[in-house]
Image 1: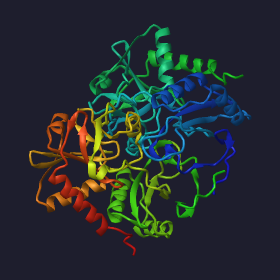
Image 2: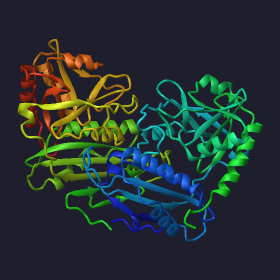
Image 3: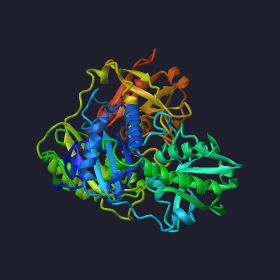
Image 4: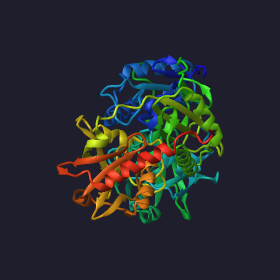
Length: 283
Length: 283
């Protein structure tokens, strides 16, 4: 029915399809990673693998060996290219919420083009909205990059104006948590603040890198609940994810921010770190 | 890679696999129905289709015509059999939370064996636990049968004792919402009570049928938040879903319930309604 796609491996074999009874398809029963590839080298490979393992452990899905993933990634990345390497790991085939203790997981590696990003977003900053769609709270699922992403899909439907690059989402308590596909940071009275993600949200790889770099630059850092009022009152604001690295926010609704020294310093350091942490651990 | 399965149709064609880039697999971006089949006839067909359409509308996925689904179901149900007919509808292929206005949805129809249920559950009742796993609240997703089911998958992992047939889940506010795969009813001081599902939970087809039959039997019915204390203090308790119809609960944790007149009358009426509302609307 479906031809093998040259850039896709299912459990190590070239494929274009997965069994229709896969639990990833039935229930979103799995985790994934979205990895930036520059000149054939994946960025922050070890960190992505670590988060994949953490998510798999939380859902009690058996994670593949790091060497297996690295070997398969290397096969997809034979030719130098820029793009996105997606790793998906599902619990495997089956029906019913309950499952055998150790089903055979499905792993999917896929090399794709990097989606188009607005020009000059990194240098000029982007405009951002507060979205209506809220994030449900569940500590058991918070932080990991699982495949239950309907809230993000519905939130993205609110982003109809092309000049708005991203939308921020609140949780049920009205706290700012993250963008639909980014984490968010604020410089608030000299302190770098990012929302706590213990009840909702995805703990991004670039968020982790920014937190490390902020400490290295000796910024005071706080990870805690953030109210929209504080977001609007902040002096600087920026977004992060693995594909964009860091985008300054120049406008949140009607509030304009300067692209300040903190945002610039972190953008610079993060770009340098991406260069340093490039490539498969194998090589 | 994957052979066509005789009992599976993807967009009307016999298949065993779906494209690996399907958004159902990436994000759980879809809805599904689980329909009981008796002697080749699906039960409550029109109701299942109505809920599928409601879910598709909520997620803004284009629903297939009822005639298409009925025709495809009829092809799978050529030979009289008992089993489960599963319908899945995803937004189709694509990557990124945002999507084109009208992607081509994927519909999957699948005829499967009915999973084994504990013997005498319908007549003797079942034992039930309160589970630790909570349900996140999101009014945008509440009620519909979408494919983001990790909470149920994790909850089902708590059900390790074979003598416990189901587990009840609370939401973040501590209200009883539903079982992992059932709705729940209580007879509380002569009133039939079932949890409100405006913030979490799936509004089951059998729940709807029970509510109709309860009114016909002139029970007072209330749909509202239910605290665990009220659940424990109730005189009767039962569970419903499309495959089991109605199971009396004889024990919730240490609390024993009688299988009373209300439960028995509703079980009888629901079974009769299942006989009446059997078959494809086509026929």
